[in-house]
Image 1 (tube, rainbow over the protein chains, first blue to last red):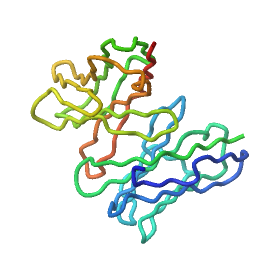
Image 2: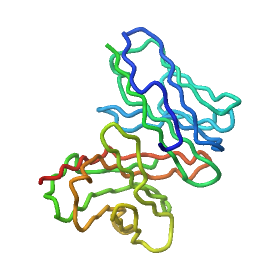
Image 3: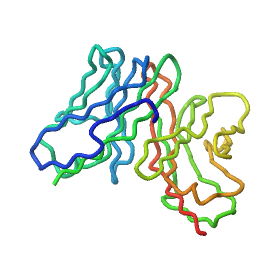
Length: 112
Length: 114
């Protein structure tokens, strides 16, 4: 157990639907990152939150949004889902300065 | 912009043979470089990292990597591969801004022959 918890582990949904992925960071870590891993795009940075505020944005679609709550857990919301959104979505947390990342085991999203 | 290239999509080696996975980066200054491993159904585990100093970096599980500035490379090596090393390996560069985000290469899948 890495200390970063992602739920659910697997999700199957239909096109056009909306889903929410949840991430609980390692205890004490203030930063949460979301990455998407797909066959054609590889591992892509989506968005970062630090202590409740958006800090950096990557290749995140407008249909996707995220937030970090006061208890530091984060949610990634994916709406109007398309087949191409099928991917493994990773959350990672980081504490302090530097690159001390801890990755969760991911949520595998399948859009049918 | 920073980028990472892993030219080999798949590599197959025999158990006990040596391994080298290639990684080239594009970055103006001295980069922060990483190698991660992803086993099936698992998250990403850090093998090793390079920030500065000695260009030969030792990591976990018997892996090492060498930073070569002249070649913009950070290749991962292991002298003797074990069947349990079969996984996908990702090279990454840190963006060195306040976000500390990582930019990953496309990955190399390692297959190990018995």
